Length: 336
Length: 173
Image 1 (cartoon, chains in turn red, yellow):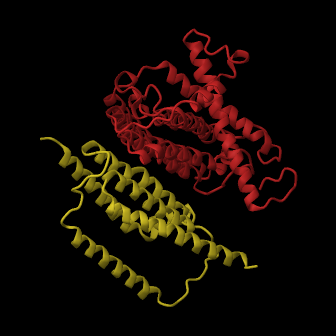
Image 2 (cartoon, helix red, strand yellow):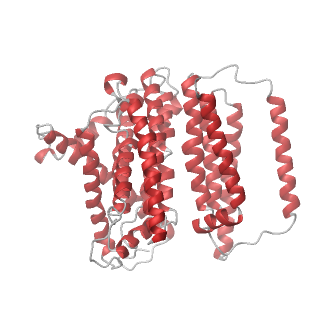
Image 3 (cartoon, chains in turn cyan, green):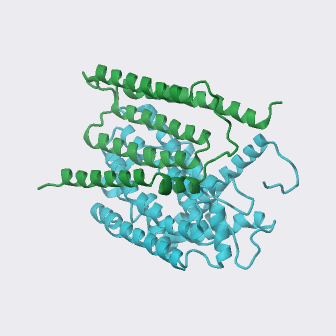
């Protein structure tokens, strides 16, 4: 339990504080990613300035975008299934917000410290497919339905390498608990990215595909499907999907940092020290930005995969590679 | 004040009935809904309820597996299949099948048999409140790979056979 001012909090007070911190932990990195990478890095890579007018160096552009989406008209397509259409963004968003629960930010700074941490995260993230299918079908539009189906097929295909890429780390750490995984890396004196570089590569590619970002953006291919399952959404409902996508990018980057880059620890610094509870979240955020940089770099650089290439990559290359990685890791674990 | 363990059991019971009533309603809607996609979505609610019940019992691993396998994979495949073939928005008239009375009879008989089995097994004896609050992953895996290894292997072979069968059926000659 985190008691920075040595005050005892009731369970409900603690829960409210955790809820507020959870909201901040999701929304702040999301905004940071959108501003840093989508507005600035993407512009620089394409030799343009990006937003510069709103505030110093365009820093208030994010607020302007937020306000723009809020004041737009809330449109329902005439033939849409209203309840399913309206509920879909919230299903995706809930799945995203539950992801952040298992992330440890320090030795005691955790939301819930459960034994099955990483397993919980992978299970919860798979729920978002339901929301995407709901959006695709509920819109009663061909573009949306096709986009939803493509998204579902892609998410199912890439969930397997995502889960399997983590197994190597779990075998090395002998635990599913994310705090244990962090401590284990500290004991080893080595981050798991070194022995598990294949796992890290597979994790990164799978996350990219799970986010349906370029080069894996067949579900939203704008030249064929307008924007896929998002086609009929406008205003605040579109914003919810947008936040969910970038929040998932942020949280999965943080999970990747926890699994492969030592989480909130700094090398050669005592991991159980009290001050790590305050520095830890910042260290984790820095590592998260590092991994998110890679994800957005690929997003901006590579052209789109064709549907059959995309499925072939998952089933014929990544899953066998992940299985081989698991077998080799298990053998080395027993042999060494 | 009640002792903490007793209070936890009361809270557990309250939430059991709360979740169970939601599950019963959703289960009824699965079979009475006039839209097949809605039926599949109600099934998600039922399965999420099952996962919640497992969590209430402290079976964290089984509960999360329920979410990953049933909600994340099985229902997604249902929805995928429905949407690929017939995905009309709005209600459909001919969803009721003539076989529904035998189906209802089978369901009622299954409930009776299972209820009888539970009552016969437990009777009036009270179930002791366990000291240990949750089952760990280690305990689950130890049980699967020692006590239940034969059943586990049998299920693996069965699944493999089903997998090969599906490929053979789907393949064009």
